[in-house]
Amino acid sequence: QVQLVESGGGLVQPGGNLTLSCAASGNTLSIRAMGWYRQAPGKQRELVALVTMSSGRGTYPDSVKGRFIASVDGAKNTVSLRMSSLQSDDTAIYYCNAVSRAARSYWGQGTQVTVSS
Image (cartoon, rainbow, N blue to C red):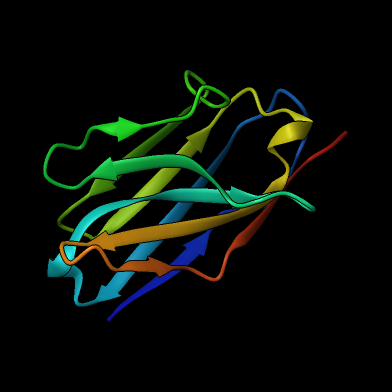
């Protein structure tokens, strides 16, 4: 089992920046990748960033590419998401995700990000 705890959500103005953090505990040696998803009201949960622990390389959808950067720290079992040039469309609950080598997926409780003036 892997437990994930997010922090760093909040209210930010359009064009602003925000960084989310997520710490993993439990069977962290089994983690193959860590990342972030988000879910806006009335919409499906969507991938925001996924980083492979071994390479540190991230995958991003076009909607956030160039604005969001995710990074992992294998020693601390953490993943962060640095978000810049935030827009109202980025408003959502952001969920930390970890994928094990057995392809099992774990989720954090979610943290609210609201982009509004």
